[in-house]
Length: 330
Ligand code: GH3
Ligand code: MG
Ligand code: MG
Ligand code: MG
Image (cartoon, rainbow, N blue to C red; front, side, top):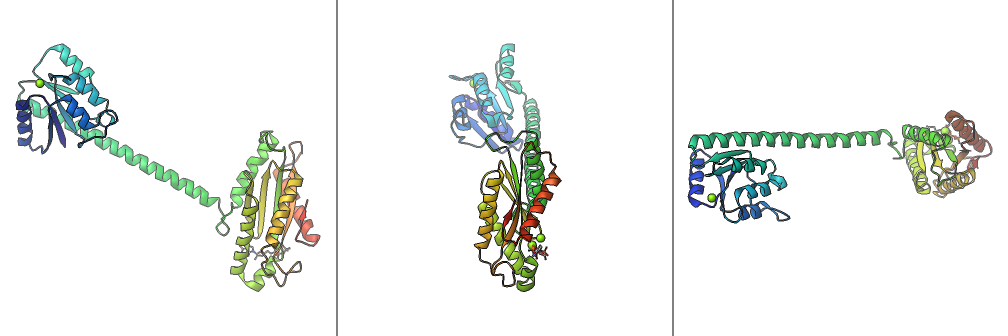
């Protein structure tokens, strides 16, 4: 451990250093004034110029800046807050003793000192310092582990709410959002800047079983990824959620969106998928992959339930299918 001696008297410094070296302490710095110590330790905005000590032996009587003032200034440097300071002085009056402790010193020894007393006090101060260091390390380690765990939990949550194939929010994530938005709307907590309405769009790839049969499952997956891409692109408005509802079905949650606006969004998504021009030779609808959409909108005054809204979207989707597919139905 590193010991710093601050004393204006060279003989005392040499004596202290000699005793310490004879006891096996090898990292010893000596400075001959409070000013030197402060500037080397990085007082104020100055960067530290030397290694941080684990213990400071500080003379009380020094010209310009005495040990008491030096002590309180050293203690104001954050990295030295835990570094014990032992005052070493020839003055044995009570006032100096009191001032030393008030200034932050942790021990006090009078000159001429007994070598053995000096050494036990030093050993005890250093033991305390290493206990503090160990505790701080443990705290820092705990903090590191805690933040790693928090990150891991966040990541896990993210993974648990994300669909692996399309990277859209999955069914579980949708259910959470849907419940929250439904509650907000029904309890009149919806964002006042938005329209007092909420829309859902349920969409399903047309003739997708045939698509898989002809082009294979891998191409089928690829097709779903490209549909998801269109959903992502067309639903960039804040608050809008595009999710994979399951299989080849997707869902859009549009808070603050009236029926007309939701139909417009549904139409954009529909033409967007058609515009991908993914070949589908066996589709009865088109020579390209298409989707059908069911749109449902609710207002706070509606006496409805979450499942009734989903059922209504399902019904609208069914009607879009029945009416020939590749269309949005309210
Ligand atoms: P419709 O126009 O009436 O919707 O006809 P459809 O063939 O699309 O309807 P159906 O429900 O019979 O077929 C859905 C198909 O979607 C069957 C299933 O194999 C396929 N599918 C569901 N999930 C996935 C997936 O993750 N990857 C692939 N490749 N296919 C999937
Ligand atoms: Mg002195
Ligand atoms: Mg389906
Ligand atoms: Mg389908």
